[in-house]
Length: 130
Image 1 (cartoon, helix red, strand yellow):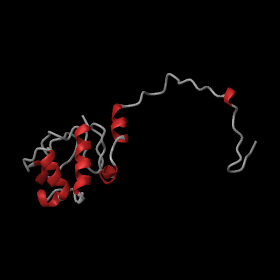
Image 2 (tube, rainbow, N blue to C red; image 1 turned 30 degrees about the vertical axis):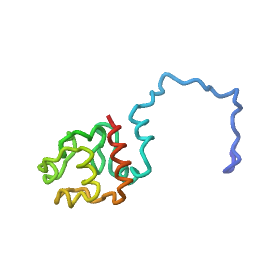
Image 3 (spheres, rainbow, N blue to C red; image 1 turned 135 degrees about the vertical axis):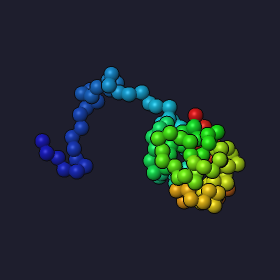
Image 4 (cartoon, one colour; image 1 turned 90 degrees about the horizontal axis):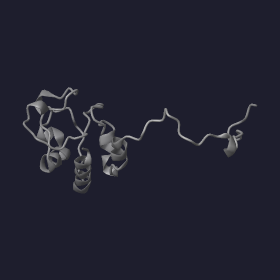
């Protein structure tokens, strides 16, 4: 039977199988981390993933805290960032997020977070991605 928008017929609850099937995948831990991101991370999400190894315009940020800048495999970092000698900790991330191109001239990242409170929220969140 054809129906118009908003007037489709629905099966009764007794006709549906509410039990999960063997083909349904379990929820990933990274999905939980992504869901707990602060609102301040929304801008970051447009270029960065929080899933291990899943790079976008920018590298995945999973496990970034404690690593050397430009040292995540599978992403093509700028020579400037690769050779910067920076290790990502709270202080370096705060400086970076204030102005990436000021901290490392020649880097590819151009967007920063000017609000100190929002920067701290982003850094707090990045520390949870392990």
